[in-house]
Amino acid sequence: MTELRDLPRLAILPVDKLVLHEHHDAQRTPPIAESIQSSGVLRNPPVVVPLQDGSDRYVVLDGANRTTAIQSLNVSNILAQVVDSDDPGLSLSSWNHVIWGISPDELLHVFMDLPNLVLQPTDCENASRTLMDIHSLAVLCGPDGDAYNLRTPRLMFSHHIEILNAIVDSYKERARMDRTQLKCVEALCKLYPQFSGLLILPPFRIDQVLHVVGQGHFMPPGSTRLTISPRALHLNYPLEKLATQKPLPEMNAELQGWIQERLSEKRVRYYAEATYLFDE
Image (cartoon, rainbow, N blue to C red; front, top):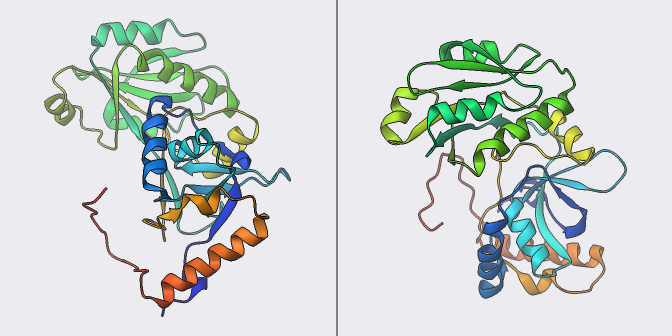
């Protein structure tokens, strides 16, 4: 039987102690809340990292919409997977943004109008090296092979995040945006007939994200990609157990008993290999 200590760390936490790390899509909250309420279970727990500032708060690195959905249902507590910031199984990388549905010239002029932002010609092939510059915020690759280094004279990381938020805000209402890890503009042009540009974002460290969120700010939407191993999925924890008014220690003791029961019934499976799920 799998030992309990080998499992991901699961805990029931007050939902008001969870803070989001980036702006979430408010339009996605109502259908998720409706699904949770109709099913009566929280299927997949959010992944959270504790803030080391004495506030007893946790940063939600994955599961923002599930968290806001639980909040909208006026449920006081949430089941989460708790991960330490230095956990060797935790990895944080960046998404790139495929922008489409707006003319490349219009997109370029939108960026030119932003304060504290300078566009410097560069090339996409050297994007990773370009982003190592302390003044670089992102690289924009256009459909015709032109590319620009989006730079700022400001040095503080919090200022960089502020400007990056302004960059994403400038096109998220004017155009369509998808997240991708592709950097091949030629391939993206084939996938997106109305391709406007590819915004390549810099890599972020977990300590940078925690610092920004701890100061009350948000990372740019769709900018961070979390991977965690092991990951707890398909728990289907009863919503009624989260909505009770029992003391938190009692609720967590009940959770551990619930997990142990599933272990004894051999209802918990571990997959070490890459897995595709076809019931999501």
